[in-house]
Image (cartoon, rainbow, N blue to C red):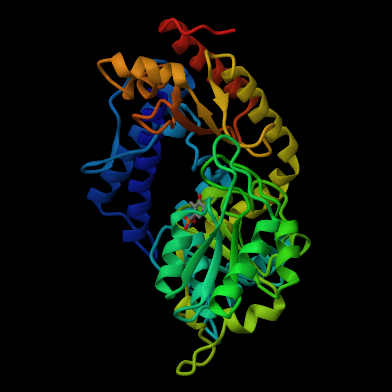
Length: 446
Ligand SMILES: *Cc1c(COP(=O)(O)O)cnc(C)c1O
């Protein structure tokens, strides 16, 4: 009821906003518009009553448009959605999104040379400078996702037939970006189940092997700072040192790190650093950041031969409107929260220790956790799923009934979850919900 009331009020105010827009510049109302405003305000007042009384109970979900149900996962559940925790927006970003929701809404003051990173109202120019500094790099640009950053780097460095080294836990988008550039992809192995470690020295060995076989060293190496599979934090510094000896540039994929934990590209030895706004930078989708070292800026952010000042890899301009300004609104929050990383890891470790009390369950990846993305193995839930009439969906459904949202529906053996940004009360709730489900199905909880 509260969530419904909240949206009723917000949507009613949007109707008032629409009248403001229709009556510019002097806002003189017709009879009909006056009625619209008064009715909308009445709806706000009704909604406020529900909120004032903090009423409990179920209400049908509300639609923002026909067929579009207003999303309320974050308002109704403790969300442990593995890929979404770091992308949750702080209030200031949600407000900014509302205020900049129109198309092209950052282009009002786009002056020569007509580029996103030079706009001063709102001050995107300063924002770009701050981003580069925050990431310990020299130049930064916005992109629609980390994948578009990989694409820009590969397209700038790789010619068809060149080899790109990637870690064997790489995200599929790394492969696609390499494929599009016509690269040969060579994988650096990992130790496999259950730890999935990557030996930094293996980058050097693979690079030498490639050079022996093809006569040419790899032109680029990619490392997942934290991988999507088990959430291991890989040793970027040692990988970059191995590569430096061979003059191979490193693209560090920080989709799961930059924006949630302290990351300094220069200290880690990254030549390029790709970040994801919606994964880890408290930003709306789709958004990402490519930060590069000075030596590479002219190459990756090269200007067009045909249209002066426009950058080819960005097709001139990338993120506009609400997405770009909401990122900007989130930066102070992001800068502040990375300092609290040790406590975030502590919560993840605590949850792992609780979940490992369930039957034969165990955490996959390196222990103890160094990141909040967790992959659990639950052989006992998996056993239950084989006989349950809802099959693997039972776990998702049982947890959802207990206020926990975000597991991949259908999975029971290997389950990913992320505690980032949850408070202790919520983390304890998650642990309790899992143990409660276990007990319901007579799985021993130690
Ligand atoms: C999601 C993800 C990406 C892609 O990021 P986008 O910002 O969605 O393009 C890249 N790498 C890893 C490890 C990811 O999890």
